[in-house]
Length: 247
Image 1 (cartoon, one colour):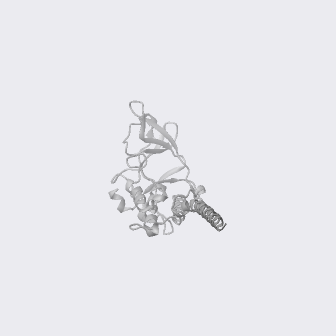
Image 2 (tube, helix red, strand yellow):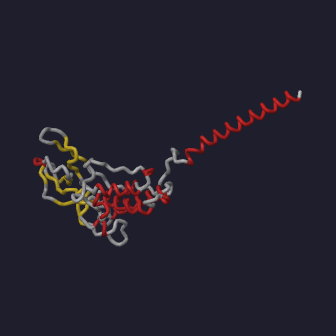
Image 3 (cartoon, one colour):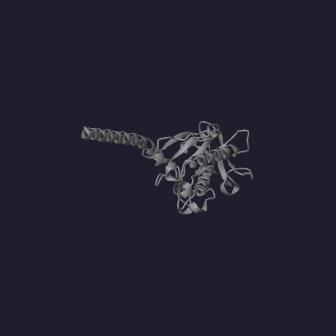
């Protein structure tokens, strides 16, 4: 009888251990992703920048002599924009060392030209600051949160303030082919003419400075060869970021 009782006790103990192990496994399966960066939780960032987003232009595709659409050269109808010299005040987020050039900005906003774009840039910078609170960039060996934010500021100011160079009015009969390294933009005056100006694209290095210095988990991406949105130094806009000259 004692042997049977001992065997029953061993079985009960084994079952208890198996149950305890099962509970531990369930808890571990639930907590592991949260502890080791595999979580699917998406943070809700603040502030909301929707109301500050500048009005978009209407893209007009161009075709080459073979009748094919051009890859990175195109026209845009930007009736709500103007190409004007930026003179940022001391209170602006994108300061004079970054955007002291002619930029395409939204017109008739009731604000100083470029002020809406500056608020847009600052809003997205604040969102990046908020996002970094979920990241572990403070313990990175080479680049800290401050380095990430500094690089991001150059980038968002270059994006918010596209550098432009005015050109003579453009007649629709003279469309393409153009220099494929620079997209042509303009405001439509009438069905035949555009106020013409060339956009100097941001330097690819300005983008890659963010890619290098911000945590991988941020998900920031840059095109390696695509020339539709960026170009290489010196034919591009550094927005004051001299470190981006090397790409």
